[in-house]
Image: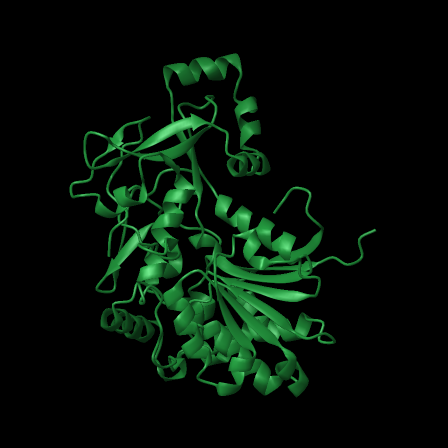
Length: 418
């Protein structure tokens, strides 16, 4: 990641043009909407389905088609040989320009130390009287898997390594092959590691309920999951689902608004208590004010995240979860509450865009109780990692100092429920 993404989040593989937010106003890009209009067929689709297709469709999805969607460093960065922050940024800028890669994840930039910190956290807290079973969702290039397997092989009792399994659930066929190659650099890892090419959000892919304890790792996955969008014409108007449809008379897309009907969207609205906000603002004065000065509202919903967590809790009820992701995204240009940062990168420089309609061609409320903790990345790595390995000569440490908008989320089952 370049310094821009260190403070702003992952760079989504979209290109955007300015869109005025008006009900049913068509979006007409200045050049042909070849890829976006191919996503949308004759019938409108929900925003989450539009995003899912753009990212993961096996024929034209970003992660399915681009072998370089996730960067792989040829060699680890020797932080101790860099003078300080300026030297690190210069080195990183050079890497991006030479590789032409969209982004490098933290586990790649700080290999092997980032993955080893996760491995240490698992070894300290896992029940090692049973075989260690790890699932990783969206494993990228396999760097995390190899780093964890390396660390356990070298630091845990032999029986732990010999009896463990590590399963990567990867939706991209290209990345699935890269993961096999990365982990296969150490021959003994191959008997413990496998890749399942499937969508982790599809419950049927998990088979029968797993009754044994296991670990699930998700690094920068939740921010890449599809979101839904809801819209309201004014401060007190009811929320409506946003759909994407083709324009019949020209090459372009527009938003279509419908009453809330989708079950995922309705559950998410309920959990976030957005429906209660409508009730609070429905006084006579508020209604009169909103009629005179209507202010449209837009709100993005993490429906993809909710669906994945519901699937995991159903399939792996005794899982322990380690997730790392962004806790906030400053300077987002896409309109709406909880809006994503959407950007493209060229020659090592990123550009942010203002809407989601143009893509370039190139837990349940009644779930089981769990113990959870959210911790800053710096605190997690200081506790479980080796921060001295990512420190430059003058004391600057990019892993601890630059990733202020990222956190680790840890969740383990609660066994003493009455």
